[in-house]
Each structure stands twice: as structure tokens, then as C-alpha cells.
Image 1 (tube, rainbow, N blue to C red):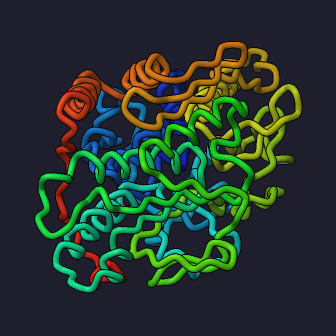
Image 2: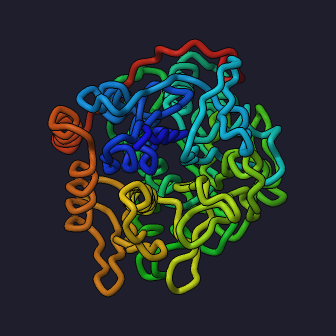
Amino acid sequence: MDTHRVVVVGGGFAGLQLAKDLKCPDTSITIVDRRNHHLFQPLLYQVATTVLATSEIAWPIRALFRGRKDVSTLLGEVVGVDTEARVVSLKDGNAIPYDTLVLATGARHAYFGRDEWEPFAPGLKALEDATTIRRRLLLAFEKAELEADPERRKAMLTFSIIGAGPTGVEMAGIIAQLAQRTLVEEFRSIDTRSARILLIEAGPRVLPVFPEALSRYAEQSLIKMGVEVRTGIPVTACNENGIAIGDEFVSSRTVIWAAGVQASNAAAWVGAEKDRAGRAVVQPDLTVGGKPEIFIIGDTASVKAADGTPVPGVAPAAKQQGKYVASVIEARRLGIPTPSAFRYRHLGNLATIGPNSAVIDFGKIRLKGGIAWWIWGLAHIYFLIGTRSRLAVGLSWLWIFVSGHHSARLITQKETLKDEV
């Protein structure tokens, strides 16, 4: 057989799982990503909030496949696809031919038509986002230490998180811990415990994908930690001075966006139908209608579960899709029947709130509190790549649990945005 060229655009959970599982004779795999690393996104917020270092949740893609001679890795940004010529176009002018194309390009944060808010309320999808947010958090305390005006100081010590899904809840909890415990003895002019942490959710409750009882527990736990929870009221304005919650303006120099995502442009590249979030509507076998040689998976794809509900944009779903597509490509290459339609197996929802506090929904089994927190931690350590990362993250968490001190509190990134006040 001639060598079959599989091009995978995106080195996230879906693309990486596919490349890992696809081991077929006379088949080459080329992974294209605009970053040289795979990122463990479920713990990205912990980099943003000074818990973990960047190297603990990211790995060079080349290193992950150094033992696979059939896998090549290219650093480049895809700008289009010629479906007739079967070529992927890169921003630098290069073109990559394919026989099978897999688009796993993920998603970015979405501002629901208010993109002008992004400079003042950064989202969290990449390492650069995390280090930007970390820098702003730490600079807020540093600038407040120097500020004599009480109103300006109050604004500097007001942290607003927009969106109360798992990322927003988890970030609010760690920022509260940072202010209430970690930094208390390190400043002389300010009392970090006076920091105001706002968690704003336009919907009726926090963690809306969880059962209502667990949602209530999460909200009560956040309130005990000093977080001010606002639900049922949307943010209507955002600028360098703060945010408007409904008709109320709140002076806040640090605003974090955790409210929504928008898929990449992959659907437009291949002429696929899109849903409201820009995700490509795919066939039951995750191919594009009329183009069986093109698969779209992960956060880029709009996929229906067996019961007709949308498959959530979470890491386990992306990994399952990557594994499934690998089996389809392999079956095609070997000339055997391809697997039936993709079926998503839901593994549950998990979210941590603070030390010894988390919620888990496994369907019939629902947990909260300390035992849920330990299960959450063990699950995340298990899915990290490599023994070194598992040990590093585990030790970092143990140190914080025992001492209350976060070790990744370095201001290293130069940025010309509104935090230089």
C-alpha cells in the first residue's frame, strides 16, 4: 500500500489521543499546531492563580512522540484548507498535503458580541492567558501596597470573575485562599484579607451543569471563604475602571472572563455547517457531510450524544473522539468494517472549590466536601502526562495543603495593558 498521509491540526486532547492510538502500517501522521506544547487545560486556572508552574501542565509535543517515527510535528498556524486539492495552508505560505484530515483546533473564549471587553477581562485558554492573569493578580496586591488613596486601593483589591462554571468557581476559591491565607503576612501597608472577590453569573446559580444540591453547596462554600456571589444578573459593561453588574458599577482593576467559548474557524475552512458557538456540525462518524476524508473532533465539533443532548466540551469527550477516529482510520486502511457511530460515555463532572471542598457528579453517585476533593485531585493527577508531572503537581498541592503557601508567585511577563496603573 502507498503511505497514507494523515494530517492532524491541533495538539490538544483530541488530536493527541488520535495520534497516540493510530498505529497502522504505511500510515504517516503529521501534527500541526501553532504552539509547540500540549496543554493540560483542566489545571490551567491553577497556573493563573499561582498554584502551579507552567512546566507542570504543559509538555513539548515533539517530546511526546520522539519514539514514533511515523509521527511528525510541525509548528505552524493553519489559515485554510483546499478540500479539492486536499492541502492544508499555513500562515507562512507552506502547504501540507493530506489523504485524511483531522481538525481538532479547539476553542477560544467568547464575549457574546462584546469583543471590546477582552483587553480588560482576559479569558483563559492558553498558557499566555494564564501568565497574563497571574501577573495581573499579583500586580494588584503590589500596586495596592503603594497606593495611598483608599478608593483606588479598594478598586485594586477588588477581583471580579465573570462566569460561574467550573473554571470561574475554581478561580474564585483560589483567589480567596490567596488573599485570606497565603499573602496575609507578606504585606505591610495593606491587609490582603480586605480583598473583595466577586463571582458573577448571569444564570440563576453557580455550576449550572451540576445538580442543584451540589450547586447550592458550592455557593455556600464560596461565601464561607469570603467570595461574594452574584447570580441572575449579567455584566452589562466592562472597561479599565471596572464592570457594571446590571445597573450597578463596581470599581475593579482585575477582571477575569470565564463565561463562554467560541470554536475556531475550522468549520469555515471546510464549508461545514456551524452551530451558534461556531462549532462544526458533524456526521455520526465525526466526518464532515459529503467529505468522508475530513474529521472534526474536540471543542471544534458539535456532536450529539445517544440521547440527543450535546456532547460537552470537556477533556474526556475529546479523548474519546480522538480514540474513535483513530479506529475508523485504521479500519479503512485495513479494509475491515468501520466502527458504528461515535457514542460518548459520560464520566461525570468534577469541580473543586477550596481546600477540602469539591463537588462530584457521577450520575447516581454525588459527592461533596473532603472526599470529593481527594477524588478530584487523584483524578487530575492520573490524567497528567508522565511520572515527573504527577509527582510535581502532587507535591505542590501537598505543600499548599500543609503550609498554605503558593510557590508559583513570580511576576515575569512584560505586558503593556491597563494593569500598569
